Amino acid sequence: MTDGPRFSELRNFRELAGSFGSVAAEYDRGRPGYPEELFDELERLWGRGLKGARVLDVGAGTGIATRLLAARGADVVAVEPSAGMAAQFQAVSPQLPVVRGGGDELPFHDHSADLVTYAQAFHWTHPDRSVPEAVRVLRPGGALAAWWNVFDETVPWVRARDERLAAELSGRYHGYGRIAELTAPFAAAGLTVHRAVLRWQRRVPLDQVVDNLTSRSFFASLTPERREPLLAAERAALLAEFPDGLVVEPYVLDLTVAVTRS
Ligand SMILES: C[S@@+](CC[C@H](N)C(=O)[O-])C[C@H]1O[C@@H](n2cnc3c(N)ncnc32)[C@H](O)[C@@H]1O
Image (cartoon, rainbow, N blue to C red; front, side, top):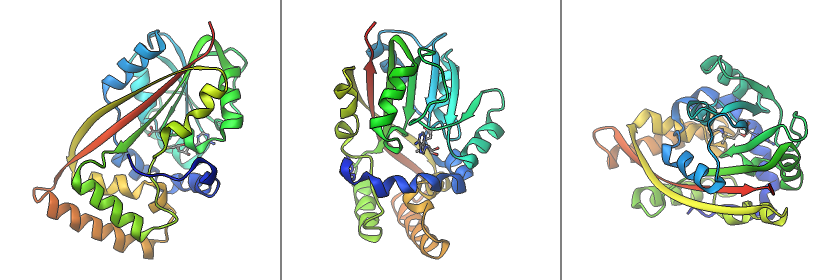
């Protein structure tokens, strides 16, 4: 697991949240989706199926998770604060509803949803506001689910890249480490918390991996003069590791499901 900022240090880190809009296209091209096992596991931990469930997908971005939730039969509404990300969402998935808003103030009535999801997004919210908001909009027995795809640092080339980036971008570079700390507010709010960790990988062209890096908030917030040489160096390092230009990207997927009282 990458070593992320301490929860108490997340204030400056959240200022990066606005950087996504400028890299929405790279985000949609480069970021990984989520395997079916994630949704199987979510249903198992929640004890209910997604089919027909009213789901609010908070921090939906370009809709990567929203589309998968819809494909599982959920009645899903995306919630996204960034104009750039919401525009990309609408361009890619015009059939799905997206509402401009954030997790700290959900634009929905009390008891109007069965599930609130945060796919790589809960850490951008303020838990002292976002957790009570989720509880407010959930129906009895509803749940919130937060998950993060973390690069698997047990794989040597991933660890070497993280160490390079940490050295180059100290103070900016972060992973999604300390997930147990990030999700501690769920138990503190009296919810019943379940957690699962899945490993998976994808084999994708090198350009997609570079788009993935470009869309990370710590790269998106750099000036082009600073960003481009770093990306070129990372491209060269990837090519040395995967000469055929096809990269096997290994992930650890960390899922927390917090259930309200029935
Ligand atoms: C890493 S992206 C995740 C996007 C998508 N859920 C996915 O799985 O690819 C994080 C998203 O959270 C959004 N975001 C930032 N601050 C937020 C907040 N306070 N509440 C909800 N979403 C927020 C960002 O604009 C961005 O689209």
